[in-house]
Length: 163
Image (cartoon, rainbow, N blue to C red; front, side, top):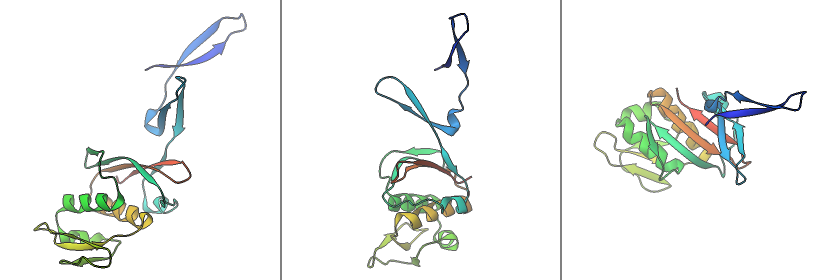
């Protein structure tokens, strides 16, 4: 959809000049009155930038892992589980982890067991701040494309890319 800039000329005429908008760096929000609000995306592409934000009480708005869009089960714990199953190698996961992982089955003290033949690890559920670091690190180290849009508690939205 083309976007036009309204310019009132000296002679009273109006010039509608087409504007090119970089939608890659903006989130487009359609308002009830038909207006469109463009909010500049805060794009995070490295671990240090990732750590600058607080993810407590955040909401995952969209998720794309390995070029596949996910719309359900967007909790941090389920995303970690999904990434581990995509990696499909318990040793590789443990090599790059930033959270508490044990080989084999452990289901007490907040641990979640992944029974898949090639994985067979138990990871301890952690808060959203530690979870997003684990998600980013595993995707980055294992070269898995990741794009995740998160609405923070302060209503700012950030986009995280692993590559």
